[in-house]
Length: 312
Image (cartoon, rainbow, N blue to C red; front, side, top):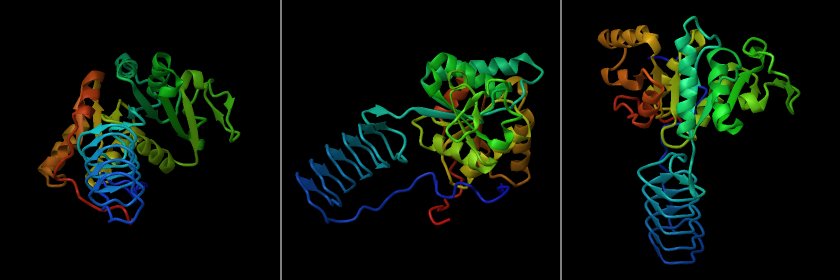
């Protein structure tokens, strides 16, 4: 699948394994391996970062705690697992919060099941301590999922990101607060934090970066929507195929809304335009609970391109 244009995220590959260097520092402790910084602990492996604790694994970042696994990122806590991309794991003594970006329409749709799905998704996210990143609108499914989650989990659980040009279209009367940049934003106590940006590319990049920095189970969920929603879904799927990220993308298929898209994916596989294994880059669910679980259990396709985006 070809992207519609240059990726706005050239610097966020699915993983970056750093190569530790040798002994070139002051060490205070017992070191068995190569140390490339000031260490104050017992280190058993190759450490490239400031380590204050017992490290068993390859650490590339600032670690303060017990690490059992391969960590590539800034960790300050206990990590027990496999490679993390500076995100998943325990940081500052607590696990990083899961972030889900919800793509959806600025319209409520004609069927009440769509708004019910938005409220249901917010409820399940609140029950699982999951934060929302979304397009910043206060109307339609966008507004419903945002205000429903704020009502259940507080304004810190929601971050809306909206281009300035869209503010007049994707808002209601709650856009009455002027922020530090002299721009109108909705009431934070109702819709959470809102960031106004200059264009669509910046919006999509910021939303994706928050998901990439989230804890386990972070990813993207699509509620029903129009052209903008499906464009966001397919671009995010393309980034996954190209190796820019490894997060899951789930279609919350309410009343068969996304059956047509799934049929197109199958047809593209049959006609040789999508590799069969990459058909599962997009996963599906019919309930909010199923969508959350689909992201938690998401496995990256072995057929994705293993491209290096570091120098792009």
